[in-house]
Length: 245
Length: 248
Image (cartoon, rainbow over all chains, first blue to last red; front, side, top):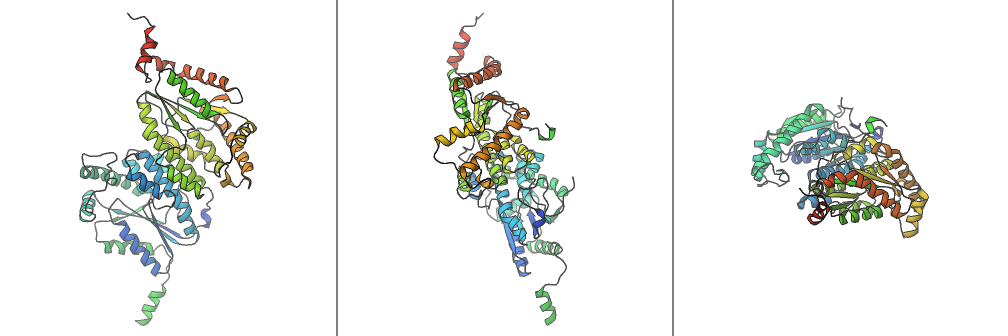
């Protein structure tokens, strides 16, 4: 099934949302844990605002409705895999309806740190059915671009060890114990997540970026590609620069 | 009924059995289910009980959403599915594996009725609940709207915002909104009765009659599983039941 054009629904319309009213841009940064997504999102935000765009940035489990419930659930020891998927989809729907759609109506550029693809990949890594997940999240809007920061598992391991300095319970898939300790479980779980994302890559038209490159270089690639989403118009800043030259 | 609308729930491959009751508010289903559960326990069977919208993990989120009226049809549907997922993963499934009879007061069918009235697509919400275990028995307590309203409106001091479907803007008066909302839910239940294979109980009958009908259906359906010991029984009750049989 071909992917609909940007700002249409993948599968199922959301009650009360008319895609014809939406005018902004929706940009998705995807990729596994610790791959450097949030660094890029904050750089992009600053850059786009300099260019005069209003920007909304959002990400998983940040919604007003379910964000706290998810955080609390992850503190406990009873959160099951299907419940986790459902909770995250609830949060996603809340942010889509109450943050993303209103921002798009108002002509904002929305940058989202992960989208339905991470939710689906985590579910698939935990043994859930891909078709079920796809239909479940089918009310998502098709983004203008999905940038997939791709890294292999050894790269992720070194990011975790050099960066935060410890493995995270959930990022290691320890709820299902893919291995005897956090290291082994992390390797196996993240391998599954990456495999699931790779499989989505073609169907959902991901633009893949090698995340092992330096952050500045990744940022330049993103700038170049995102720049093409906007009509070729010289910005005020550039005009001034060329005038003074 | 179109095939596209057939729910594909997860088959129950476990030893235990799942019995669910459905119906609009005021249909008397909870009373009937608790009488049934008591009776099953008295027969020496292991009985577990699970109620719609009761997961401790999700409670605070639901409460926040209701209090601040943050729900849309989609998030209202999803948070109840999250609640159900938690109860199923943490309680219903382990109990079924152990061979208990799980009695559920409302099930996915409540979402198929209520959430569709709220405006989500029937196809989408049926997919949402594909992880739900297929009940062995589903009772639908059918009652005319006015009878149910009489039971509810007489006995309660206040109807809550979402219970009355106030989010649908059917009426600005809460009692009128409740009436219209429940009426539409009733239509959805009636429309899916055949599709879902409900055992329909006439909920205008006496409590005793309804309970007798329920027990009869349950015995028919479960007697084999009880006889073979597939369903978990109290050891003493099991011995008492088998003592009468000749031992060679």
